[in-house]
Image (cartoon, rainbow, N blue to C red; front, top):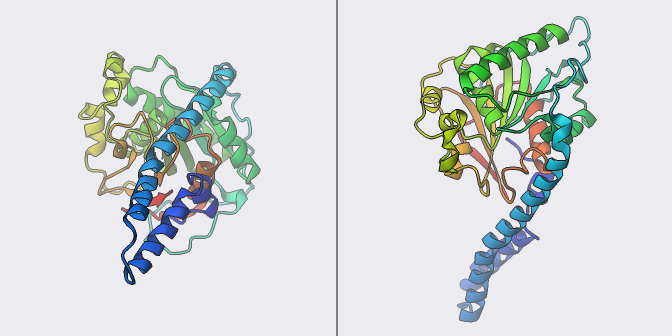
Length: 324
């Protein structure tokens, strides 16, 4: 997955990545001529060691600011979105893209705006659709006309049941818009619900691309005390749901793009937000410098999401793309 320049630039740490690269090049070239002074070596190492805590501090400050802003917006998302808001019927005669997976290609053209499938935005645990205010605006400004945010109950006690309900919502969206497939962007638990629907309930017939943001695909061990909630228990490593997702999924036609952050405080271990499955078409995109709450609101992540949704064919690759 080619990452736009703004993606790496927006998440750089006060230019320290560029400085580190320059120092590396300088030291390698100078070392062939004369040894570097011990003091210079120590300063370089100290600078590299300072980068991690500085980045973590900045990410924590951003998380707190986002949390404060989201608390103000949260009441606006408590009610369900009016069906059809932001969705218009597609032009007559337009056909969906071929859902069959194909071999990866180097340059995949973007879908014309008229042919873009609806995008369903699915929030995380005890959250609501208000978390997608900025992402929805970003998609709308860049030509996505079919956008819908779904709320699921904060009292949801079973991922399987919630995934079945998601399937009914998607059937209704397809019937209303005339599209046979949709794209989904799911944050945290929302991504897990959508993956279960696509992988285990036959939803790959309806879901073209699933983008997950900070989703515990392999389970997370964070906050053991919260395991009293049944959904949290289902998100633990080794749960029946996680084990079911690890099972065979031959022929699954959905393309999966997972964004995971090296500073996601809720993903323990952090690599759990990656999708590792031999039967699935996957792309794992590493995001550096932001935390869990920033994933659905950061403009650089939004740019990466737009690029993932613009692909009109399955282009999954088993590797990961690192952006710093």
